[in-house]
Length: 215
Image (tube, rainbow, N blue to C red; front, side, top):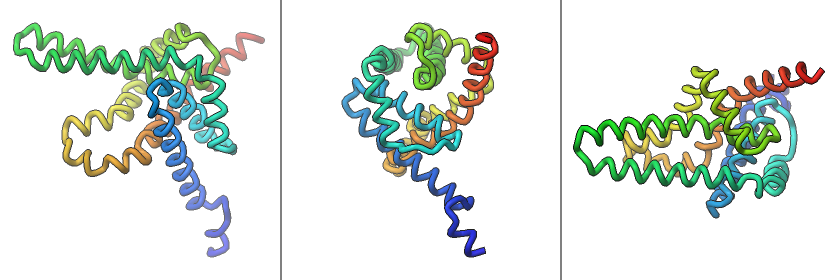
């Protein structure tokens, strides 16, 4: 029994190794997002490494992260611009509509929420697609929309996973403040890990279909 515990491949060691990998990826993403213009590159690099982690593929995490980041930084700029503009527009709309009390404002508030949900889901597919497949941004976003509407249950699960910090902050700012540093340490990495477990199934199906069509 004690001999099994000290084996590198025992369940406890494997679990803890994965936890530390997720924390490391999370920290790399957090640091590389600080300049803002690098958000797209760092998010895609995080998904690139995480998709391999989900497959239990061994590899140097830091080197793999920065290799992808460096090679795809310029390509990632359109994604960064779209993410930043989307976030700013949604925040501005919510702020303006929050000051209104008319019936039309309530309708527009609902429309804004629907657009926000749609945007989060599409971006939740577009960045992983960029991390996994070589396509122009327009094609990636088109494929992201297609995946979103043809995999509604998975899309809703991904939406919930990625919306946890937003919902928590809105529902209970005081408790979110207590766990903020924990979330900063591993929250985004954990969400990305569970996203990747869902996405890898879809991506494998796409790859198999593409291989079949090319034969």
